[in-house]
Length: 275
Ligand code: HEC
Ligand code: HEC
Ligand code: HEC
Ligand code: HEC
Ligand code: HEC
Ligand code: HEC
Image (tube, rainbow, N blue to C red; front, side, top):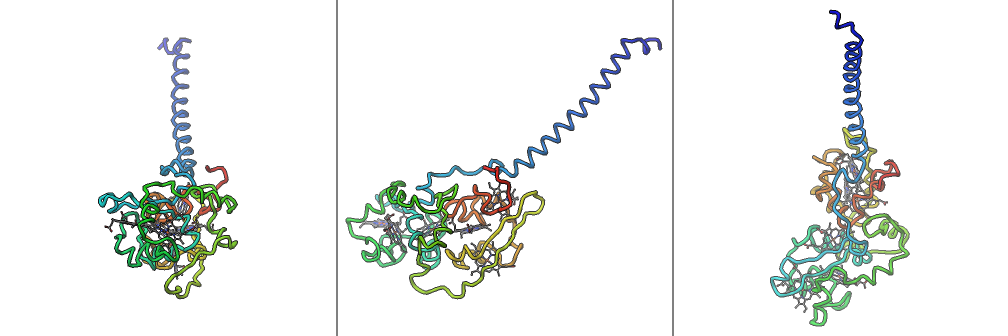
């Protein structure tokens, strides 16, 4: 009994008490900062694990090699930026039936020569044809094959990512005037609703989807019904992580249109300091 009141034991008790309180405080601080980091992290590109971006002149360049090397030909380099200056996505990905997926379309030398696929334009009139002297222009296996041409676009309106070119602004200001069809003009394309797509359970400003900008490049059938349902908020499992796997918005906004790194272009109210 006496010991309890001895000064040494009082100090010990007080210390233990203090430590217990501090431990609670530390656990609280730990959890609190953890949550804060998590909340700010979900705003940051690192949260999603972005694929590395190629150099601006290589963004959208692809190397088609479904059958080439098997036929002793070098793979075919194709650049989106050089072709989209002259044609919309619709021309190739609807009229000419190129898939929006690498190495899927069954392009052959014969089909090309008979005016399909690349041969719809590479016929010696619209663009260089399929004569022997031109094989290497396509079968070159070189991702950098037309770098010098890209340098000529230095005065185009700028963005931060991808080709670092604001393609919608280039089109709207008349710097480019890509053809929207080579066979038949599309039917009614007047739908111009801007959709606000907000994610539940996340403290993130909503994304916008402007139909108007997209149908300058694309046909309704490029998105509906395969990529998106035609009714607001009914597309299942729509999320940034699936976009990053190349689905939904990521079908185009990882490889050809400005990449997902450009948060503010889709989430206009997101804070400025996100890299
Ligand atoms: C305008 C671009 C272009 C030109 C020019 C071109 N090719 Fe091709 N060629 C392609 C593409 C694209 C493919 C599909 C590649 C793949 O999927 O691997 C292809 C595929 C091929 C294939 C493999 C498939 C098949 O048809 O058996 C051969 C062989 C071939 N080309 C030979 C040639 C030869 C020879 C020339 C020149 C006389 C030539 N190509 C010119 C774009 C071109
Ligand atoms: C001149 C024709 C042409 C135009 C114009 C064109 N593309 Fe493509 N695109 C292709 C070809 C060819 C492929 C490869 C198809 C294959 O290998 O099966 C391709 C592939 C793609 C891919 C898949 C790339 C990958 O790495 O998986 C995407 C995404 C794509 N295009 C989007 C677009 C968008 C968006 C536009 C308009 C801004 C566009 N394309 C304009 C010809 C074109
Ligand atoms: C809708 C028409 C069209 C289709 C389809 C098309 N091209 Fe082209 N391509 C052109 C035109 C027009 C040019 C000339 C561009 C220029 O002078 O700026 C060109 C230029 C090129 C060049 C020269 C490099 C450059 O940047 O000018 C290559 C290589 C090329 N195309 C490859 C291909 C391949 C491979 C395919 C098929 C996978 C293809 N093209 C399909 C219209 C087309
Ligand atoms: C680049 C892709 C894309 C293209 C091209 C596109 N849409 Fe859509 N559309 C969407 C998305 C994304 C939504 C929203 C889906 C959701 O919320 O689940 C949508 C929704 C819609 C809706 C529902 C609107 C509402 O308020 O419920 C209609 C109607 C529609 N689109 C019509 C069209 C028509 C007509 C065209 C061609 C003129 C077109 N879309 C072209 C992506 C596209
Ligand atoms: C089929 C291809 C495709 C799909 C899918 C797609 N986009 Fe786009 N988007 C484009 C193209 C092409 C542009 C023109 C700009 C560029 O190429 O960088 C564009 C431009 C935009 C712009 C820029 C508007 C401006 O004025 O600068 C926004 C915002 C946008 N897309 C949001 C979305 C969202 C959100 C989704 C998914 C719901 C989506 N996009 C799905 C192809 C696509
Ligand atoms: C091409 C347009 C586009 C770009 C660019 C984009 N987002 Fe999104 N984001 C969307 C859409 C559309 C949704 C809504 C999905 C839904 O309905 O749940 C979304 C949802 C989200 C969500 C909610 C969680 C989820 O997975 O749906 C977060 C967090 C987010 N975005 C963060 C970002 C960040 C950070 C960036 C830039 C690094 C970014 N986004 C760039 C279109 C985009």
